[in-house]
Image 1 (cartoon, rainbow, N blue to C red):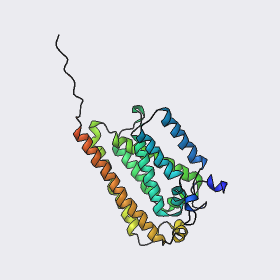
Image 2 (image 1 turned 180 degrees about the vertical axis):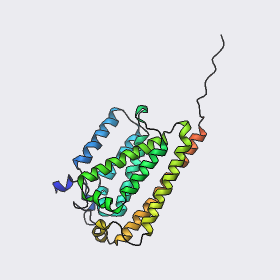
Image 3 (image 1 turned 60 degrees about the vertical axis):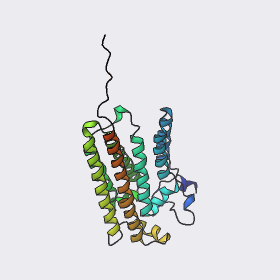
Image 4 (image 1 turned 45 degrees about the vertical axis):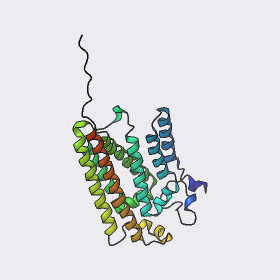
Length: 248
């Protein structure tokens, strides 16, 4: 039982089944140690509640039973992905000025390419089967998400139009990916077929639920972020108003 608790959320270890899924927590040192280190850093910096909420989303995705569910069911994998992206977005808002990476266009291109690669069936299966590749892919995805959200949400004035276009383009291509998963005529992620059947789902139904999550809820998240940014930017003056100095 202890070995299951400290193992990574891979397809071959401790599946989250209907009879005991709520017990399938993951305290794998390879993910828990960075999470605790990040939490310590946030507390030392006295970061905002927004940053702590972002950390909580990452912890929920990587420590709670959702992590094991994500290795068992395709739709849970998609839910985990959304939590990871949402948590990274909140953390990106707390990035110190020197750590911020601009260029929302390249950031969106890199992040989008990694999202599509993450869902390419051969790589998807390999990531769920091999611990080293799993950790590398997770770190790469989170780093690209941090760059993307930081470049978009903290875009300087001259790049705000590009930032909005990057958000809308990401919404469009992730919606397309979700639609492809929803309307595919056969299951693409056969490694999770036994898990789907254990939950009373056909593998194709499991995949369709995953596609709908990305297509509908994911697109809604990007759209809300774009609307919120547009309203905030257009409501604020482009340059601070300087107070007139009294003449002597």
